[in-house]
Image (cartoon, rainbow, N blue to C red; front, side, top):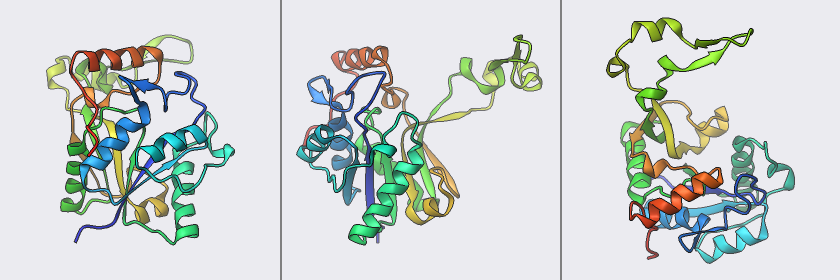
Length: 241
C-alpha cells in the first residue's frame, strides 16, 4: 500500500530578482502553474498545498487546482526566511487545524518550472523501493565546476584551490569521480523531517535527471533562457488533465 503523499509548493510574493515571478506568465502560463500541472499529472500526490503570503498567488494556485488552506505569516515570507521554517510551519498548521499528517512530503519550488511528472513519480518510487528516508532529483556537476577544481580566496586575497591535494592529484578531469547537485525536487518522510529539520534526511537516494529540467529562475537572464527553451521546443508545460 502506497503511503499518503502531500506536495508542498512554496511561493512568496516578495521576489526581488524577478518581481512577482511566481505569477508572471512564462510562455503564457503563470509560473506557479507549471509545477502544479506536473504534480497533478504525476499521479502519485494525494494533495497539493501552496504556502504563500500573497493573495494573488493564492488565487492563481486555487484556480490551478491546489489547496491554499492558510496564508503564510509575514515573518515567514522575508528575503532570508529559511525554507525549513516555512515547511515546518505548513506541516504544523495542517496537523493542528486539520489533524492531517501525510506519510511522505514532496517539496517543489515554482522557480524550477521544467520538472516533469515522471521525475516526481520515479523519485518517489526509488525512495519507497529502497526504504530511504528522503530522495532528490540530481544533476551531475559539470567537470569544469568539479569541487576538486574550485578556487577560493585566502585571508590575504590570493586565489587558491579549496582542496589543493585533490586538484593536483587529479590532473585529468575525466578521472574526477562524479559529484551531484540537487535538481528540482525533494521527497522526505514527514516524521524524519520533523525529527531532524533536514530535507535530505536519514538514508538518502537520488534520481539522475537532465540539466534542462533543473533550470532555476532567479534572475532576468534565467527567465530569458527559459523563454528561449520553450520557444525552441526544448520544454513545454504539461497539458491539464
